[in-house]
Image (tube, rainbow, N blue to C red; front, side, top):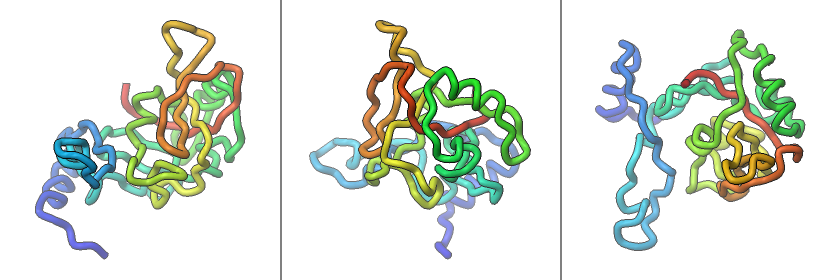
Length: 179
């Protein structure tokens, strides 16, 4: 078991008593490839410590954003690993009852990007907290403003955001919380 830093203990106490500590999570890049790049500054919420909490019920809470995510890429909160298009994915998530909650939804693109870990690849996500995550595209609810027949997805093989036709089917991960 890893030793908690003073900062980790502070965060645990603050979260216990309801203080909001939400902010932008770190990208996960800790290697600096050039002076003053992301790895140099490592801005954002800490990657270690209490960033994610495994709730023991198939869900993970992101303590940086306050969002609760379905954990297992093959579980009920991820449509059992099956692909689905945007329209059907929105309906699926809105009607999902999972881990005792019925207020699940499909994430927007910023929420989906917030759980990426750019020090990981294939998939670009923390596999400890999000096991069985495929390398493929993960669906968001965000429509491309300049072409409303397209939506944004995240390619988990490398963490790149791309646009695709809304009718194409992709993996999904349900989220709850936020606004």
